[in-house]
Image (tube, rainbow, N blue to C red; front, side):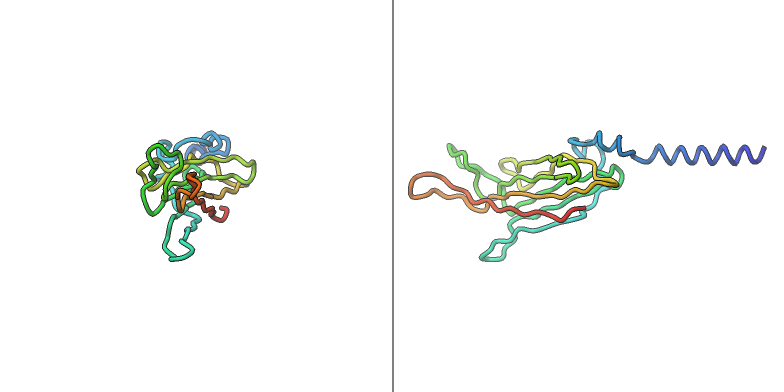
Length: 166
């Protein structure tokens, strides 16, 4: 009888442990979802990062993070810029501080993006599965200058940067 109770306890412990673990099939279902809405940000940390510096002054223009959730085995990117994204009225070109971040899974090329909304300084992408056998990285384009040329057309200067894979 004691042996049966020990076996039953072991089976319950083992199956309870499985219920707390996210399988790859379950995690792939997180692809494209909001990490905060799925509570994946509760177990998240920044795994890789990069900064974009002004080439002349050395001032930091933007920060890019690849964020990983140990509870969901997912990754997403976060982009922060040095000033609020803004648009000139009547002009479709964004001003300094606007940007687009991407999270990319190298295994299958899946990619999600976010764009910094007007008046804000950052955004985060939807998440994708980044567990065993998968790698992800973050990259971004940030507007670092917008001006009107002598021909009357508006131009903007985009800078690209990325993180290492995790």
